[in-house]
Length: 332
Image (tube, rainbow, N blue to C red; front, side, top):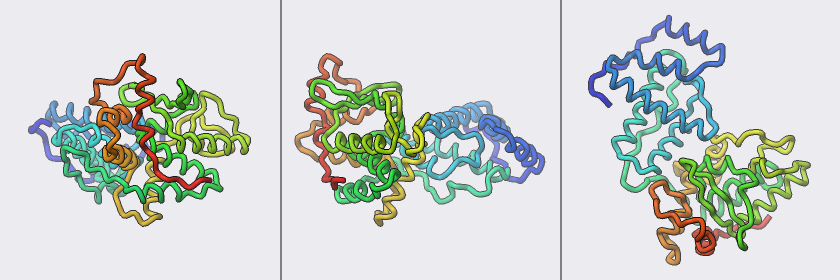
């Protein structure tokens, strides 16, 4: 970020506050607020850098079905999810901290302009970025406790259990999970396979181990018993039995599910959906029979360029790391 910039003004401007109060009464565009935020800076380079970094943040939220139109809609978990996303990508420490500081500056300005009644990031510290992701993982006992915690006699509990079974067994990213439709599940040469649409429109095929297959089958049967007829274009995760979703489940719901059950079980860690992904990857790397390359392919890491070709698909499925995930689950 360019060095030439003015200090961020924090004095309350009543005219600005009145203007945004009026704007907030109608549907707003976050870009309007960004442009007002940028007025604080004189340097063209500084403005360009802030525009770019804020765009990354709001584009990330939209990819998880979180559309922000007003600064007051930004919550602490949005910042935490974005932080985990940047760490997972393995970006340079300076890049990660610059992007996070940019968001902090925007929020600080919004609070000063009285667009927000408090700063949701006050208690969140910037990460000490390391070459390896510091994301907190669960241990094996905690995984079993988490998966078995939901009350599967209710639809919500049944859905929460499926969410955790999918995360802990497949290492899915949050956006990958919420966007799964039934047509992405299919049979291929003796394997039940999930076609995962990952970052950058990259597609990977992951066979489902028996635990995941059983859980999905039970979930779909549960929906059928509640008069929810599912088709190929329907989203796997259904928030209610009253009517089918016409859009993906909110990404923030996944975050809250993980946080809720972890707190309920007394797991005092700063966990997130990415913690589940980190748990699976760590578990597989600790398994002697699983090659690092197989784990990387299974996880769909963006820096892997040696992905096997489609004509070798059966070989890939047979030796997939997915079959090495075998946490003990309580049967319904």
